Amino acid sequence: MKAFIIILALSFTGLCKAQTISTDDKLHFGAGALISATTYTIVYTTTKNKKKAFWYSLGASTLAGLAKEVYDSGKENNKFDTGEWGATTLGGLTASATISLFVGKNKRNAKIALVN
Image (cartoon, rainbow, N blue to C red; front, side, top):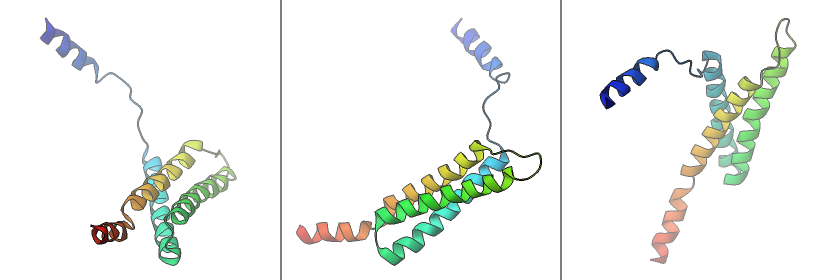
């Protein structure tokens, strides 16, 4: 009986409409990540400040997404798409957070080794 219920449940999964991510949203995510990673690298190499690099890179990707959506909404038959703006911002957040986790680890490990 359990096997029958499992087979029946799995047979209906093909009928379900799941939320899908459009190709355009994937491109926005990638563009946000690229803008954020580039900005993070430039700001961090200039200032050596992780917090400033994180916030500037996140802000750059957010502003780039906002600017593109404002530009697109000015075109005929287009509207401001908050989903695409969110995808760009989320791409920026992902890149900023990931880079922030791995930048500056060598200095911290070197200080811990000197103490021990």
